[in-house]
Every structure is written in structure tokens, then in C-alpha cells.
Length: 231
Image 1 (cartoon, one colour):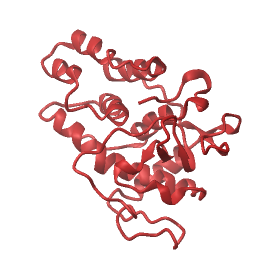
Image 2 (cartoon, rainbow, N blue to C red):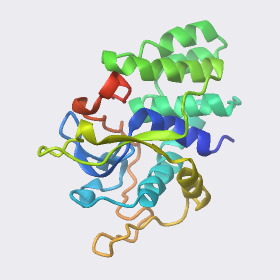
Image 3 (cartoon, rainbow, N blue to C red):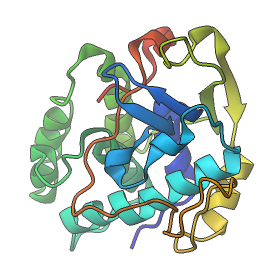
């Protein structure tokens, strides 16, 4: 069974970007950390105006990947063996679309139609700004071509409208911190560092819905170079 390892977590994070406090995405949805919204079950509104340590941002992200998103992949590919590259690509696709259970490319791949699966994978290309991400995911799944460099783009300030300030973008190497977040264990409670925000659920304040919806996108204003995720 494939597990979330450092390469898997970093590959997905490289498409998303990082903001340590809650911000509004391009559709006004409160979002935090690496594309996490409250619809994941983890209440991100607690982080409005309250930037969190990188360790906490990554701990919640890693926990949600393993507990909320990876199970759907294992169901969709049950009975088939995935490489870690294929697992990472499919997880990134599902985190972005929430559609792994109904995507035609999965059925085609399972049926042995690799060429058809590749074409169907690239049909998930709307809006147009999503295309670079989808190309990289497709290359990873079908050609084992990893794209991450161990880093993520972090936005350290927000605009007056609570959207990431493009001029605050910086590249941050998070390999060591991501590895530590994964080593810490997916099943352990993840508690915000501020006692005023702490809730005793793992992660704190997380209510597990039956099916996690799609994460939010980075705001359009933050799409420097068009490298960040859309839905």
C-alpha cells in the first residue's frame, strides 16, 4: 500500500503554495496552509489574523492528506499496484479536483488503455491556468517525471482584502520540516500552539465529513507566473 512520503507531500505542495494565516481565495473562501479549507473538516477560520508556525501548518496538511484524501485513491485503484510517482500524481489530481472516484482516466488506465487514460487526464484542464499543473501531474503519473525541488512558494503578507500579497512571495525549502511532519505520525492529535485556539480533536477542530470536497485555490492575484493551482 502506498504511503504519504516526503516526495509525495512535496510534489503536491509545490502546486499549491503556502500561507500561514487564513486568507481569502479568489472565490472568497477562507483558506490556510497548503490549500486547506474548512470543508476538509479542519476549521481554518481560527487562523484569521493568526499566522501559525510552519510545523503546525505542515502537520495538519500531512494529516489531512493521509486521513482525508489518500483513502479515496486506495479505493479507486484497489487491486492495482501504483508506483510512488503514480500515487503522488493521482493524489495531487484528487486534492485539486476531488474527482478521483469518477474520473474517466482512472477507469481507462485500469482497463489497460494507457494512451486513452493520458488523453482523458489532460481533459481536466479548465480553467486554462490549471494547465501547467495538469501537465506536470500527467507527466508524473505516466512518465515518472517528478517536478518538485523541495520548496514551496510562501506568501508572508495579505492585502487589505485578506488575499495573499504577491510582492510578499518567497521560495522556502521545506524538505526537512515536511519529513519531520510525516515522521511525527499521522494518527497523533494535531493541536494549534495557542491554547485559546486549541480543540482536542485530531487535528484540533477537525470534523470528518463523509467525502472531502475540493480544496480552494490560490487567489488570482497571487498567480505569479501562472504556476499555482486553480481548482
